[in-house]
Structure formats: C-alpha cells, structure tokens
Image (cartoon, rainbow, N blue to C red; front, top):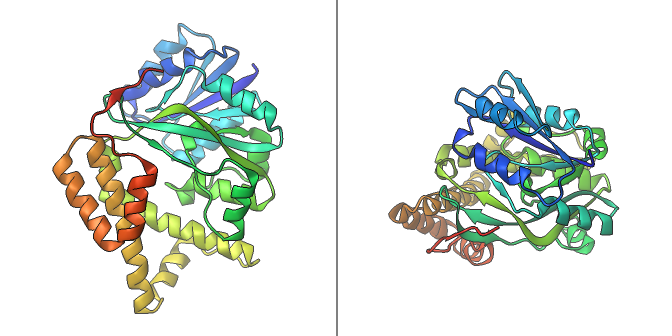
Length: 319
C-alpha cells in the first residue's frame, strides 16, 4: 500500500462507523486502514470486524487495555508504509484528506510531521467552528522554538514519517493526555521539520468528555509537565518524573503557585465551556466561560476570538 491509516479505538461505538466510512470513501484509494482496539468493553471491535469483512484494506487488531500512547505506538509499528496518517475513532475525514496531504508532502519532502486545519463538530456532526493555526511556515515554527513556546496542532489531522517518529521514541504514555504535544516538541528540538497545511481536511468532534473538569485538570498539569521537561531538555538538564514534577510545583513560592493555578483553571473552565457549547448546554457554557474570563480576561477573550469555536447555529458538514 502507498500509505497507512492508523485508528486506535476504545469504547468508540457511537461514532466509529462514521469514522471508518470517512476513511473508506477517500479519493486516494491505495491505503491500508489499521484499527487497533485497546480493550473496548462496548461494541467497537464488532463494528470494525463487520467493516473488515467487506473491505480487505481494513486490518483489525486488538489488545488488552494499555492506554492511548501505547496503542498509537503499536498501531504505527503495524503499518506497512512509512507514510502514516493518524485518525481518531470519533472524527470524520474529508473525502480528499489523503490526496491533499500527500500532495502537501510532495511539495514539502523535508517534513517529518504535517497536520491540517479542522472543523469543530458536535455530537450530531454539526459544524460549530473552526480551529485556527498560524504554523504554516518554517519561520513560524522556529519562532516558537526560539521563544520556548510549546508547538501544538490538531493530532487527528496528522500525517507522519514512521521511521522518524520511531527513531525519536514515539509517544510517551506517561504524558497522556498530552502525549502528542510531547512528541511534536521533541521532534522539533531534534531538527525535524513540522508544518500545518492551510486547508480544512478533517471534522474534529467535541462531545461530552470535553466538558470534564477532572480530565481537563489532568491535561493542564500534564501540559505544564511537558513544558517543564521541554525547557529542561533545552538547558541540557534531566527531565523530572511526574512525581518529581508535582513535588517541585508544591515546593514553589506561594505567589508562583497561585499564578500557575490561575492560568491552569482559566484553561480548564474554558475547555469545559467549549464542551458544554458543543452539547448545546448554553447556561453551563456561559457559567464556565465567565469563570475562565474572570481568571484570565485578555488571554481567554483572545482564545474565543481566534479559535472560532463558537458558532451558535451549527451546519451539517458537507464534505
């Protein structure tokens, strides 16, 4: 096969059929779809097996639950091509995604990883906004590196070079749910080229789990840890373990801890607001967004304007 598409699944039966169908309808037809079920307890595996009976391009694997990063690494290892597309089991590819991203790689053969822009959709598939990125040139990526800013973009819209990712050690499970950000920044630090393609090629689903305060709190702490690890690597210092990092934060001066918690909780409540907005729970949206703005007004208001996730009348996707 020319390319491989890898799709880790875990209890994704609600959206899995639509996700698989969006891969199978691609205008670029020469691919394999590797679906690795990570110990689902719902009907996910049966849905994949049903599709595989009708399309030989689908290869089905399963394992006891091991976590997102472990599953991604194994799925990439199973890929027969060095060109690997990441796909989440609740998102929707636009029909020309493979074709357009392969064309982008042909123009940019230096790239180790490329992503694209995405629509944000709700549980019903209605478009509620778009995510904006400004990482369209190598100069913009280098500016992020020079300013010690974390490089981030849409994970399920990624195409990557298997050989490069594996040589870098792949995803690290301990950084979940920020394991993708950890990988991109390690690759960039090693001199590998990364860009975002300025086309919307995927519908990224925001649903109930996006409003979870506890998960958002964990994600923010892991983000802080990966940024701390990034800065230590760049100073040629050893990374802290998760336990060491938590202890380090607890030992920080009170004023610094308060400032860090304020930033963390502003992002936590902002993410919860987006999740409630996707579920059309508008009173909860307003409440969480108000808290986020009170904690960090300028930054959160800028997020609301530039990220464009707030479309009141969702439109059904047309791709």
